[in-house]
Image (cartoon, rainbow, N blue to C red; front, side):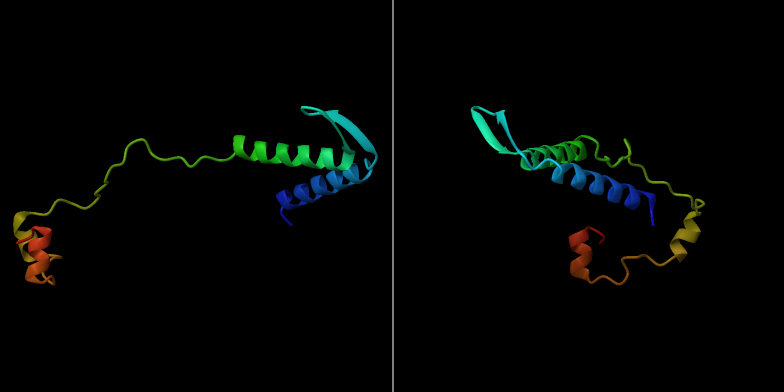
Length: 102
C-alpha cells in the first residue's frame, strides 16, 4: 500500500470516530439560533474544510514562460535539401493551393 492511501484511511477512521461520538444536540448561531446534532455540524464543517483546502493547495501545472523550437539537426546544404523529397509531394493541387505551397 502507498503511504498516501494509509494516511487517508487513518484520517477517515479518526473523523468517523469523532463524528459518531458527538451525537448529542447542539445549538449554534447562523443568522438565527439553529439546534441540530453535533454530528451534522462537525461533518459539514469538515467537508467545507476539505473542499477549501483542496482548492487553496491544489497543484498548478507549470507552463514554460517562453515556447521555443529546438532543432538539433545539422544544417544541410542546399544541394542536400533539393535531393530530399518535399513532405507536400503527396498533396493534390487543390490542397497545395489551400496551403499556399504551389
